[in-house]
Length: 354
Image (cartoon, rainbow, N blue to C red; front, side):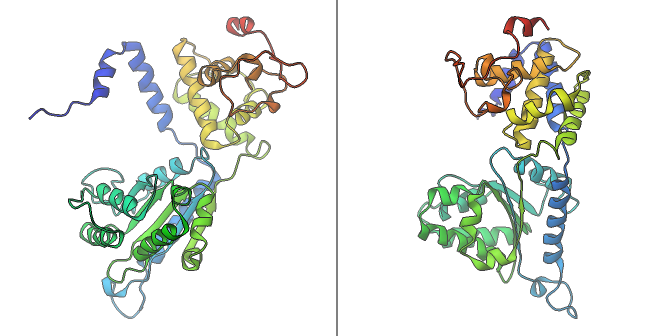
């Protein structure tokens, strides 16, 4: 039998030494986590969820399976790119209650799964089982049977927490009847008499409408919204992130980040923290690729142009009226219209020579 060979190892072997060194730097940069106040709130909500699960129903009786409260749910919502998944993954990886998170064979009490699309009862149940290392042999099992296996599997492995990411796939792909079936399957984990399992749910704002019809889930839930960045309130935080990530990559920052970059950077990132940090990552990679020891605004502009394919008049790092640019548009190649098109701050040739 042929042993599996990771195809990415072959790709890595084809890279130059310089490319591999840059990748190692970028691995360190991406590993550096930008903490905000919402991470503090996230930790508090998770700690409360755990406290509820560990407290006894009857104080006079000992801690055991017969003396547990029903589990609760924690819901983290925000638009795509807000940084929900990154914050939750870092929380789980660092929390003392979930050691060995995402490490096979670690006996971590928490399992994380990304909701499939379509996200029916069967589809989600199968994916949860796969994350436990269990593959269904029979394909004709119905939803309740699959989730019965899920609950038994959780009891066997000692799993007491399930994180479901991208749960907006449920309201996006299911009709009202199927949505109710899925809500009931999830609620079955919370109220399981022998082995209640707490839920952490994350996704886009549609998840609220999906959970709302079940008043028990709404009542049990602790809710947190990852809002858009505020150019005034979050300016210093984003500036600190730019400087900190540049330092990880051994890059110097000479420009006035708060005055000359942050507002443009946040706009390019759709005022969402996750995308904004990705913009910083791209700029750092660009600086490394051209052999620069200083992170400059032109690296952000060049990285943005490379990512979007947009010409300079539609580049928020170059344009005078950058706030009028739609940062979600790509491949904008049409000629500028003096009435409604943003003009570039300087010609591309000058930018390259800067």
